[in-house]
Length: 236
Image (cartoon, rainbow, N blue to C red; front, side):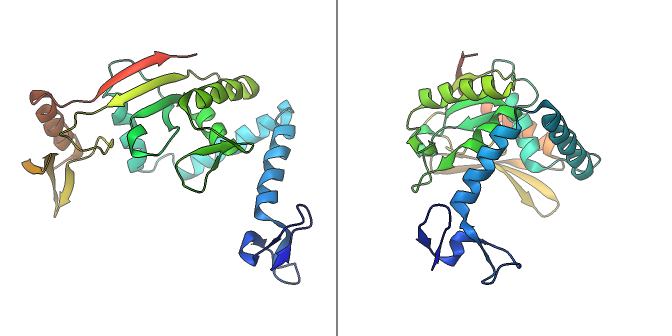
C-alpha cells in the first residue's frame, strides 16, 4: 500500500505509475490524480495559440511518419465503407460516437468529426460497468447529455464539427454486428462471403479481393431487402 501525496488516499502499488528514480519504483502521485492534472494542464495550455500550433505540427509529423505510404489499417477501411451505407452525405474525417455500450443502444450514435471525437474522449471516463461515460463525476446516462457536452466542447476547442444525432436500426433477423465486413471470412487465399439470417448461414461464394466480396455481399443484402436504415437529425 502507498499513500498519494495529492488526494491522501492509500492505494495499491498498481494504482501508481512506475518510475525508476523513486525509492519504491513508483511515483508518489496516483494514476487518477496524474490523469486529472494532465487534463487540467491541457485545458490551461490550450488557451495559448502558439502552444496549440506546436502540438498540431507535432501531430502532423507523427501522422506522416507512421501512416503515410503504408497500407491503410482495417479500421480505417471499415469506417470509410460505413459512410456508403447511409442515405445522407457523411464528410471525410467524421466518425461515430457511441454514448452507451449496452446492446439496446448499439445503433444509437452521434456523428462528429475526428478532432471533436478525440477531444470528447479525452475528457470522459468510463464507469465501472464499462457501459456509461462520466464527465466530472456526473453520469452521462442519456444521449441528450452527450449532445450538449459535444456542443460545449466544440465551442471551447473550436473543432468546427457537425453534430448529428443518428439512429441506426437493423432488421431483427440479421446480425446485430454493425461492422460492414460481417459475412466476409478468409478461406486460404480466398475471401468467403457468408450471410447469417437468424440461425441460417448462407454461403454466397468465394472471391479474390475485398472489393469483389463487398459487392457480392451488398448485392445480396439489397436484393433480399435487409439493408441498414438510418434516421438523422442535424444538431449543429
